[in-house]
Image (cartoon, rainbow, N blue to C red; front, side):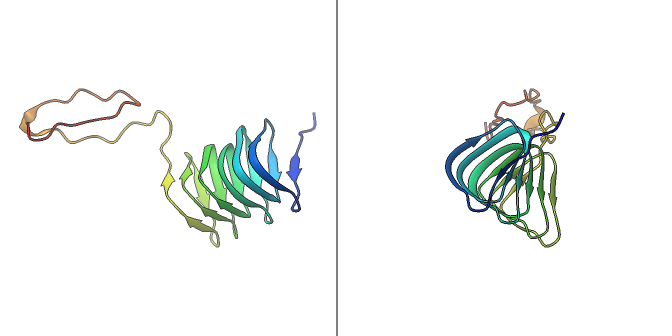
Amino acid sequence: MEKDIVNIGKSVVIKGELNGSEDLTIEGHVEGTIQLREHVLTIGPNGKIKAQVFAKSVIVLGEVMGNVTASDKVDIRDNGSVEGDLISPRIAIAEGAHFKGTIDMQRKGAPQPAQAKPAGGQQQAPAQPGTPQTQRVGV
């Protein structure tokens, strides 16, 4: 079975929301939101993206302005550029790539860092995953 490859050419401009259920290569301009949650998004060398990106894997050879969330990996290749925050368990940034933003590589279900015990020898109940932690000070 041959795998479909969808390509958005360098003369194409898309504004709005782009959703898909197959791998996608963008050589043109996209502004808005890109959602390929179970698939690979490749921004080609001519691609210019100004969007929030959600995909399984993101490969950047062109330019991305916006936050990138990938469930598997973000790969910024040589000459690729990202200005925005990255959220993914695996991130690769090649020598010669440009990146400006923050990186969050926390895996889902990963243990939280150990917290210091409160003063006075009191024990704090263990944190439940996904619940915010508050600590009373000076009680």
